[in-house]
Image (cartoon, rainbow, N blue to C red; front, side, top):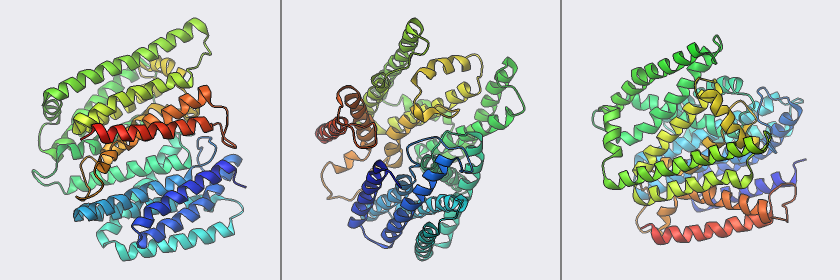
Length: 480
């Protein structure tokens, strides 16, 4: 049977799904409810497969697979985008929201069918529920999408299948099934959008910022795949391999990624980036401020490692120490959201590319910094880093940045609740920066009453809720 924490989590997910669709009930609402019910059943099968080691790929060990909440994220995002842009009269992005919702449902359904197909014995009841949910989703897509939109959804599914087979094989124990759905689904969608826009690029159309994220994400993913295949045949820890790594990175960056971006924005990407970063005095102040925060974060890493060397080699950073970085990230994002969201958008993309590139250097032991990064970052590992990759800092950055990337501009109708639109880009700060940080700090220091079946405490949860309420009030007051 499912344990109590999973049941409570599932109940919360169902409540959120019904709350969102109760406002905008349509044919996609029936799909979302059907998808949620079948994901609840299939999540139990995934948990059983993970416990017995019967999954096709090696997933990260966790309390549960997280399939139900992960299955709802992309469809709900598409529904919210569709309704906001419909009310604002933006037809193109209204259709785009429908494509996003349909794609998310199909990806979640594919992962569910995969779990049901490899479960032995085959669960009859779950197969029936999954078949009914799939029929509802496919019927709705048939009557809601145009032929070109159906092709786009199928393209994303095809990319997702290939990426799943490649990355889950190359990176065992790095993802749970739910994380794989979100991460690989997001990368598949970005790759498909980049290919689509590259083939239909029009002179002078579109903001360069719109293409920056697409090219950066696809570029670093392709770079990682290239070196992963290459270092199967070479020892990545030698000086010759390291020199080849840096040389090929420069060649791929300057010879492939830069021309690709040039084709999309019709100007030199480096000159555009420099002009963008130093366009106003406010941006100069923000860049200097962020550089000081980055230096302080590095100082925390070096100080904790020096402390480990002086005390014990088995010393690990405490929860409060790891949350220092959450405070630093909050201090980074709040001024950017208030004063210059476009700069924050670009800076977050650059930071993501740097984080992933440094992880390549650490993972492949590229000289001269690979082994040093392995030693410095091993102090901050937690249960999410049981695989070969260290993803905690990347997940933190994604959690803070996704609201800014998904809604870089206002897409809400006039006459809505005053100040409500300001909370959309702040949702990452509220959830990850404020809620998660306060809950961890107060729960680990003062928490005594634990939620049944978990390590989470009642005191930490209540303190996090109270802190988020205060943060919302401050945002509505200070962000005009």
